[in-house]
Image (cartoon, rainbow, N blue to C red; front, side, top):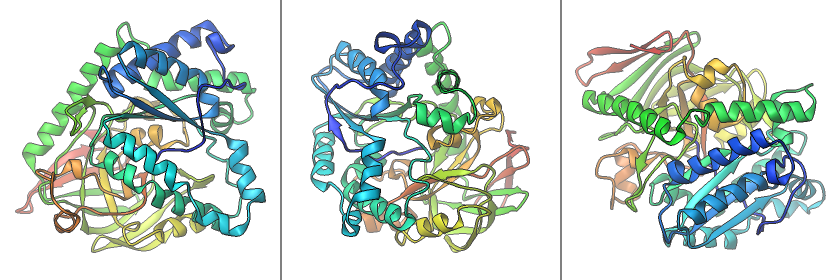
Length: 435
């Protein structure tokens, strides 16, 4: 599952140039589908309740989608919608002109304010669409330090999200910079249109009744999760080219997927799109080798052909054909960054996998293949976790970290077995497909 910490920038409903559609400047067909996506985001993604506030974070080019989501939120009875925008040019100005000491600072006051809104039962919506390559040419040390500072500042809100204290959701908006990265060499307008088509298809909004389609899809994912919970495996075993990995599962783990009930009682879909069922690994019980099956886009760098070895839960050897220096920095973020916080199963026949598009965006790419995530665990995926202190959760296997980074390890060549406590094996996936 993808988590995006709250971006910070200007607030309000100012206009933007690139990426505008419909009322904001582009074709009516895309505008109509964007409106359907906004409706699904509010009704299915958030299941926003009457009187509930909504906090939105988004790139500046996503203003047209933000406006539609805002409209549907108020129609659903929201008491107040507040949007925070990030601007690529302003981010670049920091890296090119700010003093060195500035990169260890983050706006904790703003992050605290957003966390306070969540504590007051505000819903959270993150719109994904940032330029994947924005910081690729910037000083990697400054990028790493700024990321670490932001992660520390965002910790209070991140904990409320990973524990599902509130209803939250992430959807995507096709922006020019993202579209140029996904479809290089294609004229910008065509690239944006193609990216919108891919987003709409993956987000299941092109059917006659997208809300009903999502209900059916959620039912299928919930059924898969119930089956895995009944089997209650001790571990999973992944085998494939370059992969022979045993992932022990946390004590009292639960599988989740699709719609989830938050602690505030509201059933929501945290990620749109989603094709996964996922759970919490045991932070001390991961052993063996694993190789990535798709590139990982992280902070402007495409990390390719990741190959790591785990011992007693920790990565002790890590390599990448490209971007290894960034991978090394990620693993050094904190003590939990080299351990797992999530394991997820996704069939190779996933619509996102079959699209053949490398989105360079975790929200989509993680739903193209089975994956693992470095860093923070979801305590929601532990039975009776409410009220347990961090030491008790850690004893059950839950990992703690400032990061949560998903990367793909599944493919049409990867098999997965469930291992019972007595060692008996149950085939779960063969050639990347459910058995």
